[in-house]
Image 1 (cartoon, one colour):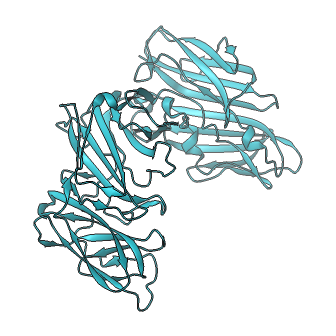
Image 2 (cartoon, rainbow, N blue to C red):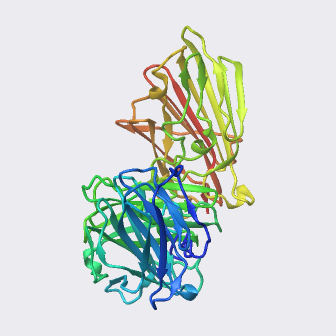
Length: 527
């Protein structure tokens, strides 16, 4: 299956729901009844979404044969009319002004087929999204249900004038069809058309491969034998301020054995979100800052071995307490913010401790639990220590290709109502270079590791940087020679002569005397 987003093929047909109303109906309001005709002119059951751009509280689902009370006004009415056997679906979208009770007929017969083509004979259309949406209201027509991409059925749309303030997003996914859904399609097309004002009768959209933008996505292995995924989604159209995020579908591939690479060919002139998924968590997304350009090639690599916490993670002070984010386990084990080079993997047993000197003030473990402690009214030195262990459903030391565990320590000075602490937090970030697509180094080779110490706003200058490596899971450590250029430090490791793992430990101190350290056990594989 080429679609990661859930498919709503039923489109609420035959649900029997009379209406779902976001407000209380007033006495004496006019009532709307709908009838639906399929492409043969036969009466069928359909459910329409009725929305008002002027009154966002009006957001109803009205099923044929049932009357729904509505305040007088102008509405967008959108519905999918399905053929018997679910072989085809027709989108009917039209403006309705209601001043008195009336019946509206949703007729699928004038619908024209939606086709997206490209001059690549190896692919065919796999799924189509047709979604009316209102930038003013900030939601799609089918936010109550029945929207989403349609797969395995022919899609039609009735041409005509769009209701004022409404836009139609058409999006299609073209892939090489495989014997099983988990077989990789090495090429995938995500093609988009945004229609305002008038829906044309000709809904065939041809693209040339050379005119599209190419997103080359390489997904490295997080766990040997594990499955990964890759996806793309249009976010914004050019410089238009209206976002497509409320309406667009996420297309891609999932449950594919990593490592793998996919070439996504996408319609230019949009900002695109590109991302990857991994067993146990998401490796984040990389969003184009500018609209992509046709004929240009872009590249993203996901799941590189990266060690160091989320740069915004750490202690902060609120009134008379030191505290951490309640989701500290999610953001600590691997850095999920630099999406092109990292994987944020959900660990097990995250734990946190806060000390004043050697005195333990607080201890917390598990997801959703903050680590909190009282802070002095006068400046004192504290230490936050965090630890997390990876889980991949198997023998961790045998199958993991990213760190088995990560431990971090941050020593800082703070006081009650200290508003400056959060912005002063920094962590080391280590990115081994030259590893294979399963994040492994060959025995006896050398691996260079650039290291930065990152705050929320980027790398900072530090001093006293020390780095150690271990080939026996951290039982013994060897100090490494550290070099630097600007705010980037680096070490070179001679990897063990036989298969195993390399563990890493690094620390540095900023100008205020705050010290951050990270220890990654079994950081990367040697094989």
